Length: 592
Image (tube, rainbow, N blue to C red):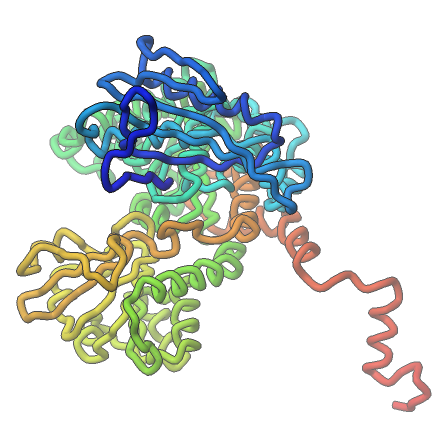
């Protein structure tokens, strides 16, 4: 979303009003849709302004008083384009004006954000479906019987266009949109406002992923609607919240004292966490511990009661890490797309390539060839990052707390050490990638740095680097540098060493852009849909069993779809046999 603020007030009407800010929304649609889309956008502003807002039109332009002396001027322009056939690029213009001093920037940003909540057009939705063919094929395989029809689905997601398609596919599989909640991961994506507006138009509830009451509100709505709950999570926002509530009511569990500790400690859990458990409808008495610390459903495969939880589909390792040590507490199955071979072996390269490309773009003008780099976390993504940096001719070191991963990195030729601080001080990396899904650097690690280092995270949120510890250690406030983007902050440590955190410590692969293209995210989202239907129709023991997800995904037909679409073209009948004979020499007159 771009908002233009004139350097000085610019008169634009006979009333003597001056322009404070202007912005536009681009929509691909049929030319005749322009007036309708403009009217929808104008009504959206008026609804936000309240009953006092009066919409008027003259000369092809709409105007509305938004209150506090602020007026909106709105019109639509059409740009004909050769590549869109019968469609056009419709540009919805908003100009905010008034008299005297401009309102605070936050106020202008708010109105601009509302203006940009323009739902996707029919043309854009159709184009989006074409970019995500695996999801479409998955729906066709699974739609029989509408497996999600009696479930209130909660989705945690990045507000990218593929999320719109995911929600649509969930609806095609039976999930009622009016009972659905989407938790927003707040990154500055170009399409975030339009995705938000589209979800609202579809009747979906939207909340921020940091809203501690969102899970409870969702389960309460599900109970009132007579629906059980299922989550497609991205980062561990759902299951840990439900487990926190369960601990608050630990007396309802068999053997709870051994797991939750004393009643005094359980009483210290917040009332809000307790409310999550109570309102989620989780019947603690319906579960019992079994061998290997996994719980089995007391209802033997029956759907949970209204407001109860059928299960969670988790797609990130950070979400899995948040469940470590708590697997025995889970009262429902967790379908781990995050740990699946499908995600690890195929998607990791795409994420790593985007992360490396973006991080290098965020650096000032530097010659990186021959410079030292460090990758913390040698999992699927970290290993790909290390390989890509080596291809860029950097000298790469690797650290991983898991000794097996560290041995793997060592035998692949990377500089390694058991102690991270040894690598930070001895290897002196210019560029550090954090790919652990947890906090990898804090005060002691920052103190080990001996030169200006640039830190790039590939983990969800801003957990990879302990930013409060870095700020406390710095001898002066973080500052921007002229050669760096404003999202990169440089901290000066007591020894004079500078540490620059790229992209505000958030994952660089999500920095002001889509992380990976829709054609790439298609595979994992199709896996999420497959997992959701498995949880709904093929009840599994409660707990976390990665092998279950691998089995379901690899037997679902999804990988076959992927290979047939992106693998080698199918050979004409008889070609393969003829080729084999030619390679072996048989059938060509040769003797063996």
